[in-house]
Structures are given as C-alpha cells and as structure tokens.
Length: 133
Image 1 (tube, rainbow, N blue to C red):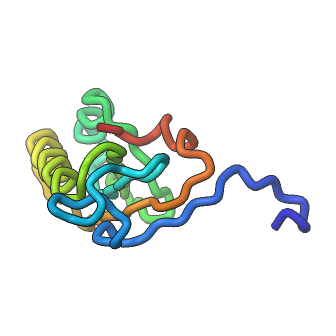
Image 2 (cartoon, one colour):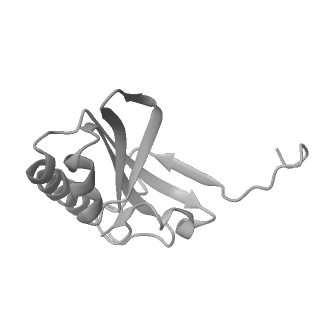
C-alpha cells in the first residue's frame, strides 16, 4: 500500500480473547501487556428516533452503517474497550454494558464480537468513537 502512495496510519493485529497471550485470571498471563486491549463490538438495529439520542446522550459513540440502515432504522455499532483487565473481568464489563444499553433502548444486540488486540501501532486512533472503561 505504501508503494501505491497510501499513508499507513495504523497497523493492528486482533485475535480471539482467549488467546494464550491474553490476561486471564489464574492463567499464565495476569497483567495486560503494553498497548494490548480487549474490545467488544455490539451491533443493533435502532430506530432513528429517541433510541439513538438516548445512546448518544448517555456517552456512547456510535458508528452508523449507512449501507445496512433501512427506512427508519439505523444499523449501529457500539464498541467498548478495556486495557487493564483480565478476560473474565472484561466479560463482566461487557455484560454490564449490554444490560445498561438494554435499559436505555429495550433490546439485546443483534450481534456481538469480542477481540483481543495483540499489536497496535496507534492505540489512540479510536479514542474519539469508543467507550473505554
């Protein structure tokens, strides 16, 4: 890509959160390595009315997929990140986030994905749109 004239802003490698290098309680890795983190992505189909505003007003930064949005509904992606927990603690955080979002908009995520970032050359790149705990 560099040879084609593109500027590389970030290089990132993500894997499964149960990766052997990820911090686990009673595991071989208990402390989070520098610049590593867990992420969870929640996908919702949310009406464009007050539900969207409730999330934004509650401090969530949303990514809206215009290609997957239809009519009065937006496909919304919410991301939460933790750089100082074990995977077990991160799962607790994720469950808390899902419950809080359910209380706001009354629905479970249509999809959920957990990841572990083992390499990231620009960790602060996402800070403007994720909820870090």
